[in-house]
Length: 289
Length: 166
Ligand SMILES: Cc1cc2nc3c(=O)[nH]c(=O)nc-3n(C[C@H](O)[C@H](O)[C@H](O)COP(=O)(O)OP(=O)(O)OC[C@H]3O[C@@H](n4cnc5c(N)ncnc54)[C@H](O)[C@@H]3O)c2cc1C
Ligand code: FES
Ligand code: FES
Image (tube, rainbow over the protein chains, first blue to last red):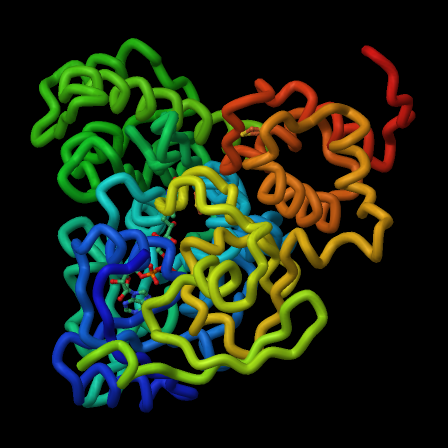
């Protein structure tokens, strides 16, 4: 049961959605509703109006062109899990999608909605950060491209009367691969801790690009630039387990904890997952150079 | 604004019948199914998206009806447990649950069955691991899941389909 009332809009175009968001105060976008509806039940979100974007046909697409992926705002986790083109081009999407919630939630929750929301234990934000998604953001004065980087998270990039129309991800050519792993909260399914890694190696095996994003262990999902910097430039073909572990032994800042898993436990899980995802990524690059 | 002021029209097809209803935008699909349409097969176990007792098919895909607004179902097709059997003949998933003693109190069963129907549509021969994964969002407090998994496994296209004690 949702304790409050609200009004409801069904825009048929992005412009109509932006109008609805702009004209009423307290209007919010409703996509799959898999984050928003639970929050409304708890009274943690009390929108005056819902702008249901599901009827905007132009937002429902998934384009895979080589390793450039364009994900329309209505594309669900299930779409990403099932696309054979996507699985062939950038397998980390299907690999991560399978670890999210359950099939019924995946059939409704959108990738873009998850980026817009940035749940502290959300899996997609880690993927969006590690793969440096570019967002197409539409508002009253037109549309703009927002590139997500080490210091910009998707949910910080949008204003209340803007809509993210799509997220585009371009995986660099060459020896590049990405892996996602998580330890799942046994009840909720969210990430107790999750890590997404993207690595590029040159022909000699030297790491020329390293992106590591964590979720679950921080106040909000974020990249880990210090650890990235310690790996960049290393020769990962002969990756020394102990060496990576040593760079992780330094204290990790800002690790959160709660009644289920304290910050020391989460910090340890984070180290283990970084270690594991790095190895899995290097293994992929070694088996398919 | 009172909820009645903001009621909106929703047209949907439920178990093959066209319905036109006026709903408050904040009403959940499961509330409208149970209270307005008298379809009490979808159960409310947790009302917090966790238990799966409320799962129905929305345009053919499993969805937690406690986590969908009725308003979101405009122009959609909803199938509930009541819509599965034809007359007195059980749907094959229902029959398999009966045969394998996959229910005790039956509270979770409609959601389990609807999730299974979705699974078998997309993956006609799931392995035991795939079944367990697919039913991850459906909780059962009675059976211990063993017979539920066995029932679903008996329907897998590769199954030898013996219904024995195993
Ligand atoms: C039982 C359960 C378990 C879950 N487990 C997991 C899990 O393990 N891992 C995980 O990552 N997630 C999990 N989720 C969350 C799920 O992935 C959400 O669906 C997702 O986070 C949000 O997508 P949505 O389309 O449902 O967004 P909504 O709930 O519709 O919206 C979420 C927020 O984003 C805003 N928004 C949505 N779309 C846009 C847009 N295009 N532009 C601007 N703002 C927008 C909305 O206004 C709202 O504030 C779970 C959810 C449930 C119910
Ligand atoms: S009542 Fe919907 S998931 Fe429990
Ligand atoms: S049979 Fe009782 S909850 Fe599953």
